[in-house]
Image 1: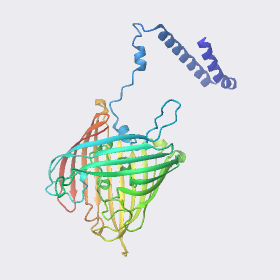
Image 2: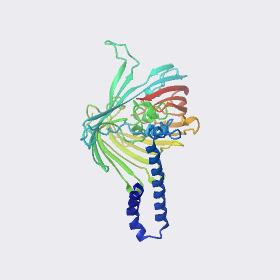
Image 3: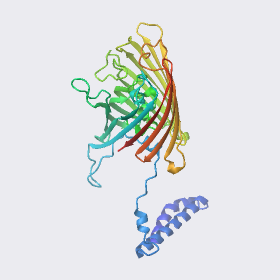
Image 4: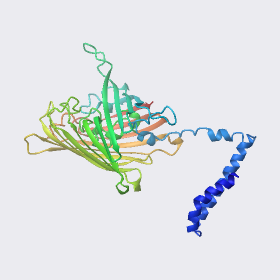
Length: 441
């Protein structure tokens, strides 16, 4: 009886097509496959109805047992979005979603460095771990908080705790860690084509700054490229204001865009204007990239950023930053490259100075040993002309090579080992060995 009913369903689905295309080989093949599948299902049901036997006693357990997690795929883990609000929970299968729906993710790391430096590496960000001493160092403790406030409104926050080198000194004694609100964003999703948000962002003017946030486990390497370093000055890492963004199919190109307006850099140019725009002259940016269907894994894009600076230790100047990137997201191989040009023209001057930075990073997840090992290499370069009064005292001119190896000890934790060599224009060259254990929870 069951077979007759199933055959009736197959006939009801296939009859219109069969009547119109009785001689269509594809239709006949489809019906034959469906009948064969019905036979297999009926046989399976009959075996289950008889109860477990010696031959099939483990069959129900095999059907219901959870699929074991793969050893690890660092690329998938790395590019999972930790910024997305969770799906709201419901009290029952037909109950309405419950708002707000909060999700918390955490990250931390512990670092080791040993270099032949004998003095402070002026201009380099703290997270490059370039210190005139060796040893272990507490990394950042990071929390990501995301919450759905309604079907179209979401909130995201990022908080870090960073160890201080002057802990316990001064009066009153300095605390052991600095607390920082790195990002706080509220976003209204009108649709896929248009989303409007307000808050404190990682400025979307290059790839790395928006793909890899705080939480070193997210990125392949130990350190960020110097041009995107937290606490660095080449690009404005943080942006306080509003963004309009969205995506469109664009004939398979999958065009993504973001345009924004907000406070420019602060008087300390490595920081954003958290307490307002210091010169009442708003910064603006525009960013666009494509991810073609035909070359899945490729991302290609560029951006512009415009601001007027009023730094503490340099003359007021107009700033333009143009950047471009090309990325291959897959891990066999992984490839990331970016270039940025920062132009500074002092107010009242007729000429501008141009500083350039770029890096290229490649990695490959080895197919052996459960795909846990991932060697990588990065070359990076920053050039600041001595005529650039904005950057010359706070951004280093150098080129460097990084050789490294990542080992994923679990799906959520990794060891990383690096050797780096630096060649500076205004100082002696140096090298160092670096290690890190990073994890998410």
